[in-house]
Length: 339
Image 1 (cartoon, helix red, strand yellow):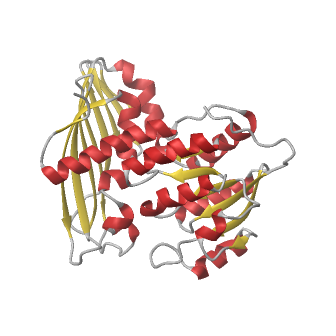
Image 2 (tube, one colour):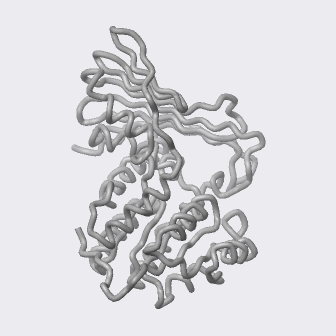
Image 3 (cartoon, helix red, strand yellow):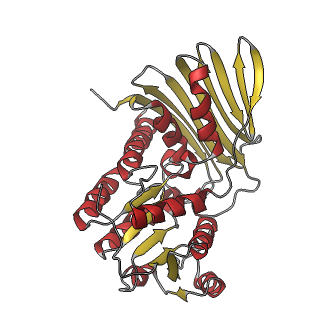
């Protein structure tokens, strides 16, 4: 673990925020509510679907901070201690690199990069400059994950998982989350779908994957559907299904974990434990307030040395699995992660 203590002469951590969307606003709210931080400046990419100068100016006024013309200008400011990156997936890596090279602690939403090698280089860079690099994975803090951890030992040896998140949208928005380059391969852009399972069940032995796009132009698609099959080193099999857009008709957020003594089913906000004794409802915690919780934990780590709930290396391993899924989908081959 790097020594990321703040200089004792500082009363607060000076923060710059890159992004103007939903996650950025939640981060800004969390930073504004914590007395240990001052939100000094914010910037967007100033391009269509990824932010614009007008929105940046409005948010800067709302949070009583300075609007920057570009993220490059923001990360170069001498009066910042930390940069928080909440913008399109494609640019996470290059903004994080610039922030670290400028001597800033760096928080970035997953994925750290859409390119595995670049992500690996960024982790090495953070260690060289002795600055915190934190990749957010709030799915580990939410109710679903905590419910699973609490009840897994009640269903015996595990053998099969099905995890499906489908989001019909009619019409599909023409925004960066439907852009091949800006979002990335579906299970890289939506890395949490794999990371939740890897955090619980360990390392992966093989990966298979199939995917399909429906689109009328080259850059943007109207629908994507991706199905990956993971074989864990334990022998556990998992199917991960991710899809969004116009060609889908039924929304689904469902996780089924089957064991030799029972099954856990999480379906939206409902949880069930099925066993020989019958079916009983189990409480599923909230998804609210997780960005604020993540932000607080980062500040606790920087100010007090408290441990974080995740390391960049753990996120990197999941990115390795997602990259294997991308290669499997492209080649039609089974990808072995270990000899």
